Image (cartoon, rainbow, N blue to C red; front, side):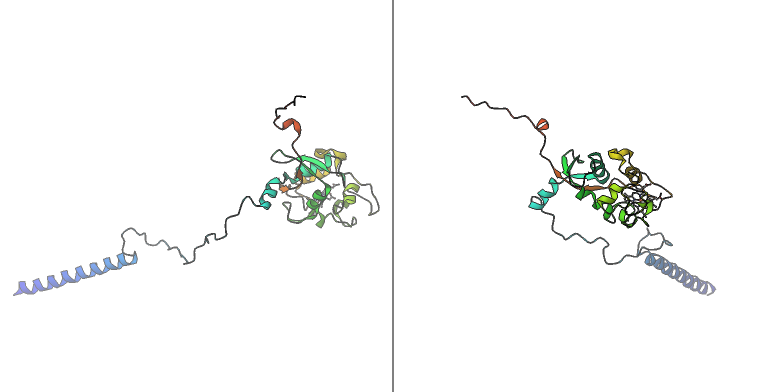
Length: 227
Ligand code: HEC
């Protein structure tokens, strides 16, 4: 009789313990999405149903069109090299000058393509146009330098007033690498606002290619007509 009661009590206890461990096991697996491989305590990554990369739907660019051909025909040159070519050729306002582009093409350009380099914003690394500081008003312009016009550039820096046509030559009398302009473009000057970062090797499209000179073209066999 005593034994029977003990059996019942033990039996009930066993059933209870098995039930409890099964329940804890279930909760554990449930929290791990019914897998044994999850590491709990690691925050789950929030994922939105919207993919962050939108698949491109634009049509592929067509090659062989008139525009594309014109593009490949243009010359590509570092802005500083274009400036250098202009200065080395005598910095004329109207006369064309030649330069060699990054692909070795011989090209021709004029001051018209040089001027925007000083006027356009967000072109050089500082983001500011040169003329936003070196503007037409010599009285307020840093270094009394006006880069807004051809006349201003030729007149140079450290001018006494707007009438004075003779300041410090910033074009190095045609010696590009020795010019103030080259120095202030190619080197960073920590203490000069607007010049804290040297101008990077910005590539631009400029100029038109010249026909290849005879010497580099493959010589064609000449046929002498018999008289
Ligand atoms: C944030 C204003 C600012 C911008 C933008 C700026 N400069 Fe300057 N620049 C200065 C200051 C300031 C000086 C030094 C003035 C001084 O030493 O009295 C200077 C000096 C110069 C000088 C030397 C002149 C001399 O006689 O010492 C040249 C050349 C020059 N800048 C060219 C440029 C060119 C080219 C750009 C555009 C790529 C440009 N600057 C953009 C402010 C600026």
